[in-house]
Length: 162
Image (cartoon, rainbow, N blue to C red; front, side, top):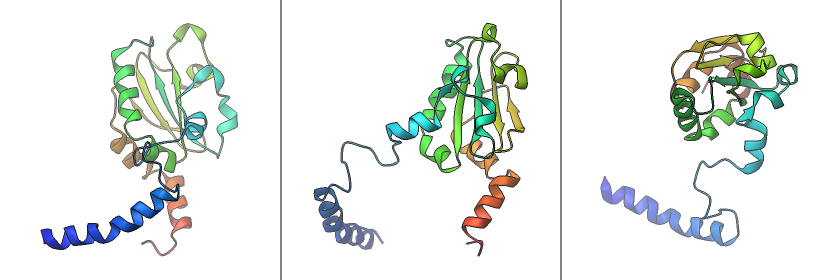
């Protein structure tokens, strides 16, 4: 099996080299990396800069609250999210962060977190899941894939169910 796998990779090598020479693959950008433009759209974005109603039926907000930017749970959650922003981007997730309880942002007044909180919302801006501890991206993605609107999107993109 190992020689067959090696042979398959060797067969793809010329195509990868020609694509890289043509500029199709940037060797300085790791596979699965998110572009700067995607970071501007999908986040993380400060809650003070994001209007709640502007996201309606366009994005799925994942809101990360903390009592301060130095909150250990907040820092851990942001580290976990940065590991796989591409998976979140595929699900139209916009990351919204709020670490200033005194500012009383629109997000805080609507969602009313206590301390650290991770809130997963659907495109209808309804909170679906609230977590008091950081979550891995794979757990977030699995939860989002169970949302009714996400399941409908997946069916529309692939009606055969494959």
